[in-house]
Amino acid sequence: MGICSFFLYDMEKKSFTFDEIKQKLVNYCVYQDRCHYEVEQKMKEFLLIDEAKEEILLYLLQENYLNEERFTRSYIRGKFYIKHWGKTKIKIHLKQKQIPEKLINGCFDEIDETDYNKTIRKMYDDYYSKQKGLKEYQRKSKTIKYLMTRGFEYEKINEVFE
Image (cartoon, rainbow, N blue to C red):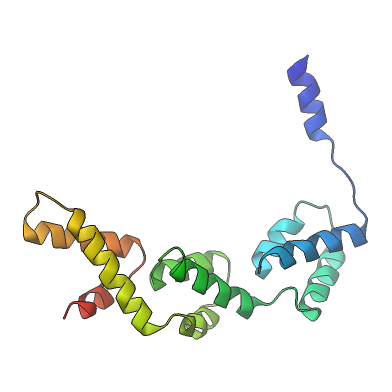
């Protein structure tokens, strides 16, 4: 009985007016910068006809709630300065959000080159020092692989250590 009643409860969908949906999407964008892809995914929660989706998207763009460049710049800053991701990993994740490569490349100026090099150096030193009991070339190789999984470019890693 419990499972069945839960199942019926779970299937109930609350219906919203167009204005309520529009306000929910405004709040979604105000809470944190969003890209078109994220907003379109969020809209799938509501059964909207194409014209309604377009009208909401247009409104969000006109009122500057939705701004792809602002989102991209914010995303790049956050993933680098907070999560310590390299440019390769950031670019892959932005492409998954359907951000054009030209826009991504144009926004990488959010990362200061000196900060980027310092981060590579610090992460290298931290990880390398934890690799005990390995031969020198194994420690170095393992550390470079680690930095590459964090999204740093092989050429850039080598450049920092020349």
